[in-house]
Amino acid sequence: MAYTLTSHYDRVIDQLIRAGHFGNRSEVVRAGLRKLEQEYLSADYLRPPPLPPGSAARSYKRQTKAEREEERRAVRASNKPRKLKKARSKTKADASDRELAAYWDQCGPAPDVILPNDKV
Image (tube, rainbow, N blue to C red):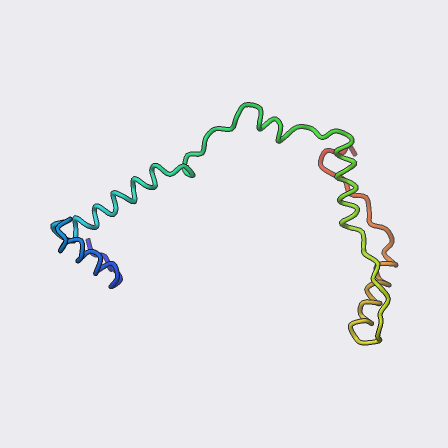
């Protein structure tokens, strides 16, 4: 099998052989692959612990009426256009701000949002 290494890893392999840790280049590469394999097989992120009992049920519980109302208010507040302050000078940017404010005034209030748990 052929492989290509950077000069850095080439020097590392040579140092390990000169130090007497390994007999040849193949032994160094095999040892590195064994270490990498052990690291990946023992990695916690590959095998996460199971969820504690009831945690999935808490995540997917039905919302109460108060929670739905609170979520609706938050959605409406984020959809509501903000009033722009009066322009101090009559530059091009201020004119476009005034045009944008006039457009939002024409659009009227933000529409009601139907959330997933709402009954239609």
